[in-house]
Length: 109
Image 1 (tube, rainbow, N blue to C red):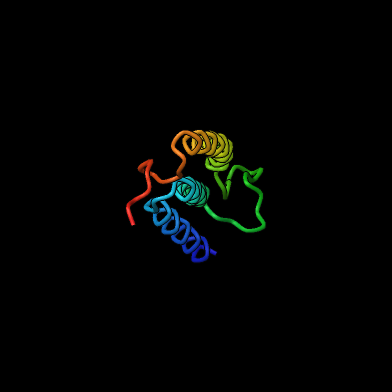
Image 2 (image 1 turned 90 degrees about the horizontal axis):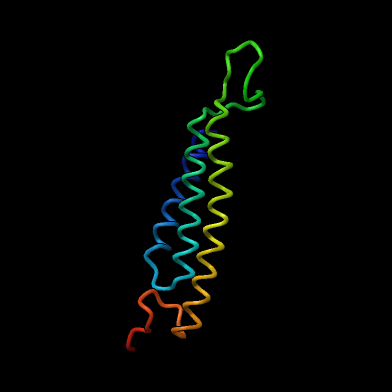
């Protein structure tokens, strides 16, 4: 289970960084989203992975920490709002400049 989660975090991080380096603004926004998903998975994994176990056991010996779960839930909501804001800014910028290139102009052929 830990290996699968580690590979997923690595793939999301690598894909997010690769998309951040692309010249189009939509690809940059998707790259930021993938990076935020990778960070959320990393924070969630720091709360210890346990399968078929309650998050907090009644006898006081909890297997999972509920704080990372709450942080990830908050980060998901904030990430969704910032992605929506970025998309609105992207559409406004495309309307003003006529292109979705990061520099605001197309490179010469």
